[in-house]
Image (cartoon, rainbow, N blue to C red; front, top):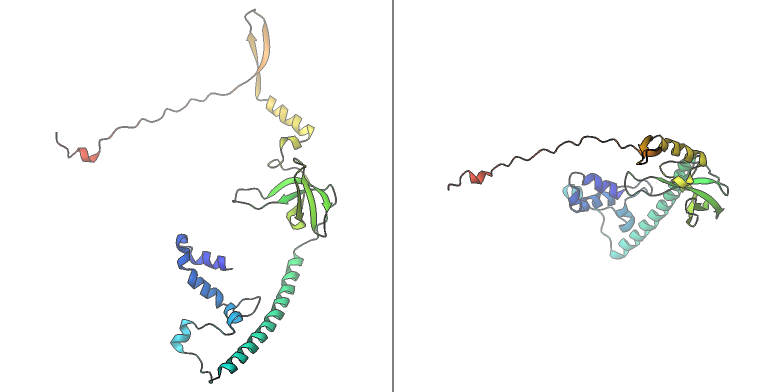
Length: 239
């Protein structure tokens, strides 16, 4: 949340994000959080922060109290706040779990099932899914041990949320060695269509055929030549 607020505030000039950090922290600490129902400043200090608007219009008058009375009331307010916040957090946790469970389904995998593994992306063009992998063992209720088909020595223990069932092969991820014999035969036939039979005459007069790959030659455009131009300062130079 703080990072989103900071990125929105420093959208115009991202290099000077540290200049808007104090105001962003002030807004974060004095805003009521939905999960706790209170501001972080009140949870920490037991009272609300004094903002510039309070200095302009003034604060409500508080009857004079001794230091002992102030400490006793502060402890009581903090204890009451902690109890209310704890109940609020438990209620929000149950509510969020209920909404999360409505959009999820229980994925069950068996041993030797083929799955994809979700990997974190370093940039937007990286692939999300890696693999395919094979289920080796179920280490827990939602924990599985997997191994990569192209490298069986590579075994990982991952959560079920990072797995997705594999129903086929992804040509962008799977290597050529993972293809079936029929797919390899089709690819070899397609490659063979790029060759042309050429009749070559040997010095002995016999003719033989051999496969030669034809590479079409395209005329290369000539590069434009640079026309030299005298600099301006030479126009004022008198010899």
